Image (cartoon, rainbow over the protein chains, first blue to last red):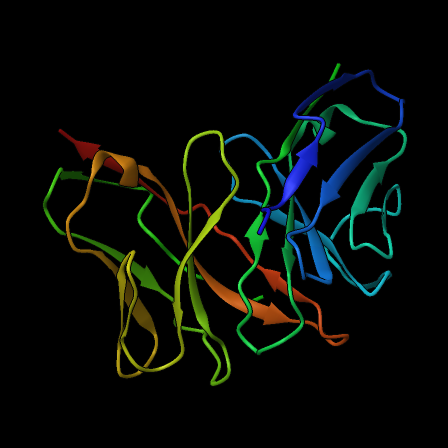
Length: 114
Length: 113
């Protein structure tokens, strides 16, 4: 059973650019969430996708968007990058079975916006 | 979002037990208490969760107060590999069923050799 993988591991962009981050969920997991973790802070929930539909969103503007594909891989897109978008972006996958289902996190993508 | 309160940092010695406290006075009757930890340069890792009763697994034990307003994560014999930031979380379920983990600042645990 493979774990959650993310690509790329590091990325440098300039202000105003657009970025796409990718996540491959753990086998058998149909739900994926994305989190943003600023330096020295705990992760903050961005949104969750279930069966290719967004079904929950945190306090993030619309320029943060996502996609989930039929094979349950997913993307996080951020438009019009701002300096404050510099952070570690984490994806987490889980199944929809059970009420207390554990989330499994990937290693993250470190985004630096200059 | 339901909130948790943890000490910013704790320190312990290798092979000694560690008790990590967490306060969650606004917990509701259906909130599960989750603990995750984040090792340096890694994503968070599930440790344990519970609702009312104390729980044990191969990584740790979770002791939950009778009124559920606090809990304690217990590492029975800390090793250097247990050095991490430990997060106590009340899992939030949104209207559409999205389950988000609301992370606080966590407790940075240092283990001395």
